[in-house]
Amino acid sequence: MKEVIHTPVPYIEEEEYHINMGPQHPSTHGVLRLVVTLQGEIVKKLKPHCGYIHRGIEKMCEKDTYPQIIHLTDRMDYLSAHINNHAVCLLVENALQVEVPERVKYIRTIIDELTRIQSHQLWWACYGMDLGGLTCFFYGLRDREKILDIFEQSFGSRLLHSYYAPGGLMMDIHPDFQKNVKAFIKYFRKKIKDYDRILTGNVIMQERTRGIGILTRDNAISYAVTGPSGRASGFSCDVRKHYPYACYDKVDFKEILYTEGDTLHRYFARMEEMRESMKIIEQLIDNIPAGDYSAKMKAVLKLPAGEYYQRVETARGELGVYCISDGNKTPFRMKFRSPNFSNLGVLDSISRDTKIADLVAIGASLDFVIPDIDR
Amino acid sequence: MDNESIKERVQALVPEAQLEENKQFITFVIPAEKMHDLALSLKYNEDLAFDYLFCLTGVDTVKHLVVVYHLASTKHGHSLVLKAQTTDRENPAFDTICDIWKSGEFYEREVFDMFGIRFNNHPDLRRIFLDENWKGFPFRKDYVDEVNIVEL
Image 1: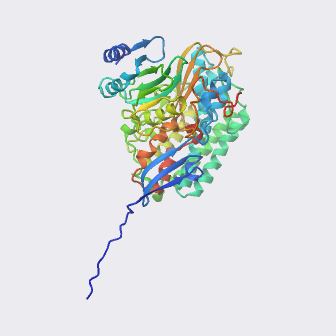
Image 2 (image 1 turned 90 degrees about the vertical axis):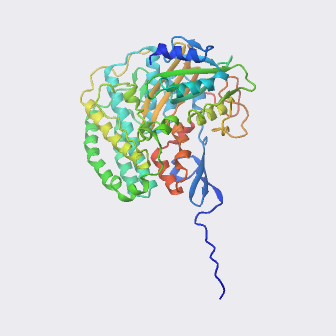
Image 3 (image 1 turned 90 degrees about the horizontal axis):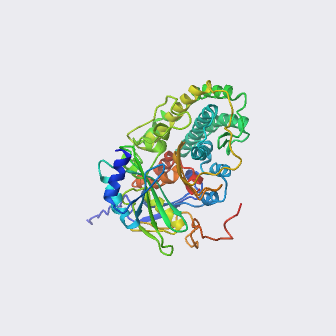
């Protein structure tokens, strides 16, 4: 009888190959290209290629006056447009030592938190969609509309508002603003329970994301991963707590911290942040003091020569604005330390040895906005 | 650790370090070749523990090409700004710090892309935003490009 020789077929392919994800892949949420080195379906290495929408905003700033720069910052992280504006406004106000009216501080804080909620709603919508739950996308966008309607009513635009100006606001809020915000909070407190029912408590989602893409605290600090992604790893980096601005020192809220640092806990961190944001708004919305909506500012703003650094907490992490002024009406050098650019750096190290399908989940949990990476 | 003792410590580590007055953070100008050794001491000394490099950027002051490091300690909460500078515009080179703070890897690629400052021992020093065969370094003050830059 002839002997049968079994040659085992290798389960994992030995050969490595490269695959391009993007620049038009739906899960990269914009024009980001990831060159993934795969062995079978296991990610061995990953190289992000950025710059598809690099506009040179920092260079443009060197030709623009400070009020003009505000309009450019909208275009970086367009989902945190107000918060980006806030960073430049604070920088100018602190440099000129302008005291803004209390009313402005209250309104800015409320609008910043509304911005955070709508950004996280869109993140939740896309996160669900990336993991295969298309219902989430519709639910998330439906509720985000409510905030955009409030924005549109008060400042006339839905995405790129440029509502803040150095010294205050462009115009006063709509008379119905408080009423509508309170109605929204009431509505969303109910709806966020639906979010939990659909996705948070979903066994498939939990099993799919638990324990993948683990980012340790040391790595989060070393890679400078901030925002909810960093806090899910236990890195206490909330600018609102550590360097309070506007009304954040007056309100009571919790910094959401987890220690696990996996994809699931980055999800939890953002869900909890939405609740904390609602808590902040509720504390302020009835107490907006009367007064001017802007401090008196000079027509031409010239910052005294020197260096300034201002940071704010956007929906994705710490945005830093580093400005060198030589005393002219335009800055000598303007640098935006954008949270997404730092967060992108960690993608390679946390997605190694995961499956390529998990890479989509990890990318969704880091919540990239590509124009903020490229600037 | 208070500001005075941080100043003393940095000056003890690098005697050539020059303190810049009236700044938001403690700011030192240090010789470029001393940066890597200083960075090691800043990160791994228990009482300094600058473990968080939150901003790294280049500045072209026309006279110098400067790399600005914004450091903070998540343990003690203090911050420090270091500036390393060179007058060499043809072939500026610094030692990389991305072996100490991982965030430096992307930041340094951006500085290389925009200012043409090379970082020795960097694992993957390529242009990050611009095209591989782009000529010149746009964030330098003497950069002229009539084709691609729109004047407002």
